[in-house]
Amino acid sequence: MTSLSLNDYLHSGETWQYLRTIMIYPLPPGLPGVFESNPYSHEVNGSLWTLQLEMVYYASLLILFFVGGLKRTRLLVLFLIVNLIHFFPMSFGTTYIELYRYFLIGMLLYAWRHVIPIRHRYALIFIVILWVFKESAMFYHLFLLVGAYLVLYAVYKWKLPTSFQVILGNLSYGMFLYGYPLQQVVAYYSPSAHAFLNFIFALPFTLLCAWLSWCLIERPSLQWMERRMARTNHQQAYKEHNQTPTTT
Image (tube, rainbow, N blue to C red; front, side):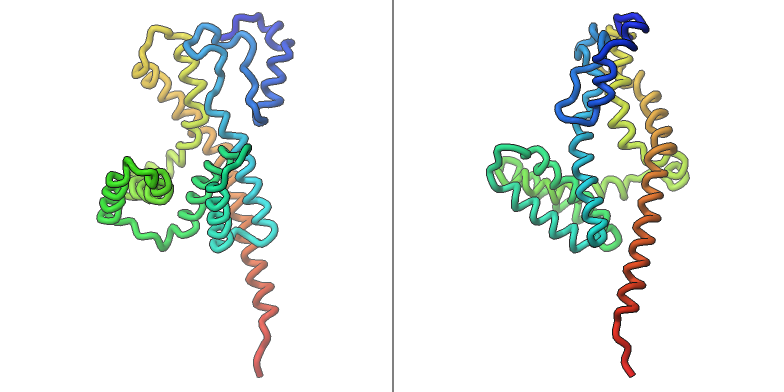
């Protein structure tokens, strides 16, 4: 998929620069000679632009975790602070702040997942609200909350049977991450294929890569985090219990 020979490709400084700076802003231009004839030439993976933001967001949660744990109240306070900052004009970092709000609302929905009612009537009400305000400046701000609920509604009301979920796992992030380069590969080998055919050809390979990523990277990482959080919460509860004064 590169116009260079294997020797030239491996000895090119651009190849190793791409790997070194893949998670640093701005993104490297691409790999030497790769996808030169594609409609989006030299673009290896357009989805990688989010990795820098995700690294910052997860780092902030890691800091919050070590200074006091990921308690729901702390997440709520952080969400309110970030939203307040969002309304002030800034000359830099606006994309980080803007998308951080969506990241945090996802965290909050997960933290309160056991108490949030998922009802057809609520989803219908929220859809009507979005439709009423679709031409208003309020739509953008309402969508942050209302749209997040509708995503939850779609996930829980239209979810796959449990047996399929156990087998497949959570493939959404892997599909997002690997879909772009695989569609570029399809475009390279089948330049005449239109967009729908490109999607159909790339889909099974994307699902396979997403499944492998879930099994080998994402699920083990989440399991480690859950064990670490459970241990920290247990230690915190034990500490608070020992500090509670006893009455005689």
